[in-house]
Length: 247
Image 1 (cartoon, rainbow, N blue to C red):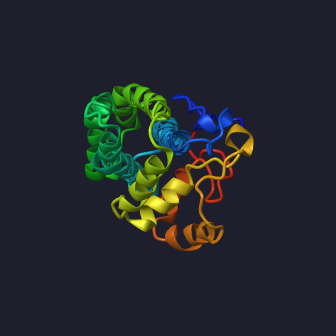
Image 2 (cartoon, rainbow, N blue to C red):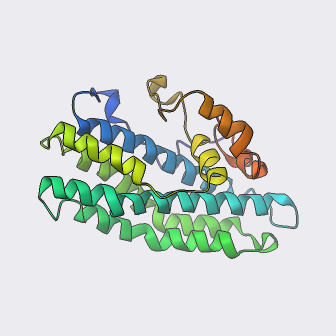
């Protein structure tokens, strides 16, 4: 691709499954799944940052669609970290018997939360005629280095849990997936699937692990309502890379 793509400026994470067997322990499985999700989040913030200054303000649809895209991304990021703090971390902490186990990770959340909220508020309250890509990039620059540090460190933290009981840890992970708060399917599904790169690390990953028909549901049902906002995604709904529309 001649245009910049979403593996920069904030770099993607190497997944544990590139060098380790995810079936050998739940800690590796969980860390690998988390790395995949974190790469979705990194591609998302990169896609906003790389396109923000090229999206024109005005009464046309471009700025309005892009502001909605930013809003959906902030929702995704906030839901992800809420799920960690409300279920996954407390349950693993109980299993380990170490109250301080995820304290550093939670503190890292606080390092970027204010910036994410400012970006979210900007997306929700800014008129398309007043849109400023420079301002969007400035807000992103204020918190994304801290976000990147956290996303990388958390994978190491999860890998270090390999001393815990394999079956019990996997049970917590499966229950955490079911405990996630319901999200708006016509917003979160298209956004998430369009931030998955099926060719990443040589195409070795089956992520997300869903039946094939789900991709068709996302493309032909869930993506319909806000279709014009999904043009900013770096991949199609089958995980195939494409050029950024405004890079």
